[in-house]
Image 1 (cartoon, helix red, strand yellow):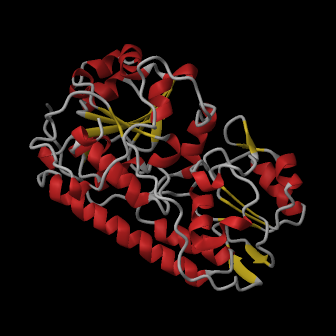
Image 2: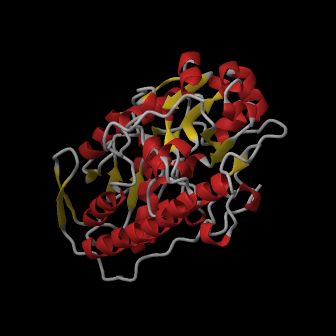
Length: 375
């Protein structure tokens, strides 16, 4: 196994939303239900218990076979501050546009990850949501009508038919002309930060809360998320190898087999903050793989991953582990391929970085360090 290179300093832990959105659009997203090939995993397996209640592997490398990480799926828990929204609320959004919000009775919160709608629910305003994007798949929002089509394309007619009084979105969905059309129709549109990472979950939460006129709730929810994430990362530090050279060499693959889409998420892709938080070794840093780019045989050979993180539907679309290794022969000849060491999680959860961040981290950590508990 190649020697691990030292880190080159602290990296920015955020997702270039436009790059990720472009990949999702190219692949037709795939978050919609698909028919899995025989023997492929689904995200309906054993839910992960708390990491501090399981027995980790004595050696993180002592495991063969894929594992599906399933968060416990805790129900939405609105913050305790339930004071009425303070309106009108005037905010300057992420694009520098000043927006005045006077009514939050009919809200759309739309982004490629489903993060914004979940945030609205946890802020205690879930009943104000009148529609959802395809990535918003948690139970409490399941009955809301879709306003996206063909994956992540915004449908102007569907949006206007819901008569929203406020739209909260970012630049991860398109066509952008639809967003401009909503503004021209007189609907207040607040564009929040499109980056996703553990470092800006709290800031994003505050942005959404400010637009809804509930800044105190935003502060409470942001504090709660930070506290929960800190607790889980402390537990992960207790089971992950202390030395960087002992950590599992890890890559994040984004796959849509039917479309022939195979991308490696590298530095500043959002996957890097996930890999770091899990106490794994991010090989993308070593091979100087930045952003989101189509994977190459050379990159896989150079990376020699011992663990591959993936979205569940992506793995299913390639025909499971066997199908993926047939499609990417170079991957079959790496430690991850030889030991079939893949950890997948539902597409709408793994890179969401919202109120459920701690639950996501816990489930992935259990799948990596205590796979017997969920396999």
